[in-house]
Amino acid sequence: MLNKFTTVYSANSVADAQLILKNIAGISIIAGGTEIARRQTGRSLHLPANVLALSQIPELKTMSKTERYVEFGPSVTLSSILQLGKKNVPDVLYDAISTIANPAVRSLATLGGNVSAKGQRLATFAPLLALDARLEIRTATDAYWTPMARYFTNTGRDQPKTPEFIDRLRIPTENWDIALYRRIGHPGIVTDATASFVFLVKSEKNILSDIRIAYAGKFFFRKREFENLIIGRSLPLDAKDVSILLDKAEIFFSPALFPPSFERTCLFNLLEDALRMLL
Image 1 (cartoon, rainbow, N blue to C red):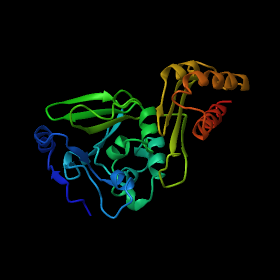
Image 2: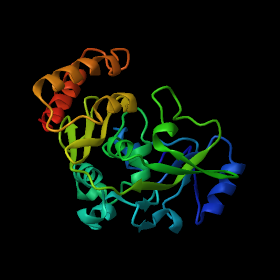
Image 3: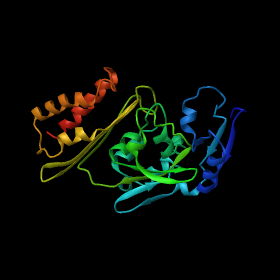
Image 4: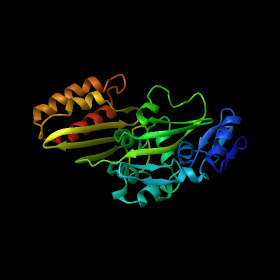
C-alpha cells in the first residue's frame, strides 16, 4: 500500500524518462522497489512525494555480451542474470547475486537498484568495483560514461545535484586465475554488519600480473596503490611477504574509514586468507 502523498510517474522509454526528469523537480527514481521496501517496517510503503518508475522501459531491461564485456540495463532483474548461467557472467558477480535474499526477491530486485542502494553497499557493489565496471548515466538532457569507482564515493556523491539514473552497466569479461567472493553477515538478509569482499588474481609465468581487492559494506574500499604493491611479485609468495603486505594494508585501510571494530577484524581476516591463497 502506497502512502497517499506520493505521485508515481511511469515512463515507457528513456526519452519519456528524461522529459519527466526535466519537468518534475526533486523527483526520485525506482525500478523494482525492493530496496525501499527492505528499509520499511510499517504496513504502508512510504515513498517520496514524486517518484519516477523505470521498470517498464524496454531499453533498460536489455542484456548483451561481446568478447570484451557483458552489458546490462539497470532494470535487469537479478534472477535474469543468474538464468544466463555462470559461463556468461563474471564469477564473482554470479556468486554475489546467488547470495541475495531468495528467488522471489531476486525476481523483482534489479541490478541497478542493488548497485545504487544508499547507506549500505549491497552484494553486487564489491564485485562490480573490482571488475572495473563502467556506468552510462542519463540526465534530463544528456548521457555520459563514467567508471563506477569514480561515480560513487564515501563522501556524499550519492546525491547528484540534478536527477539522473544509470542507463547501462558495462562489465569487462576477463579470465582470472582466482576469483573469490565472500560475504560477511547473516545469510539472505542485510544488516549493519553485512559486507562483501572480492579478491581477483591473474598471473603470467608465475608472476602476478594483476590483482584486485574490493570491499563494500557501510563504506567501500579499493585502492590501486595497494594492489600495485603486490603486482609483479613472484609466485608462490612466502609467509614473510604476506606478513609485510598485511602490515602495509594498515596504512591503506585507514582507521578513519574503517575504525577498530568487528567489521575491520573480519576485513583483515578475509584479506589474510586471500593472500595466503598465493603461498
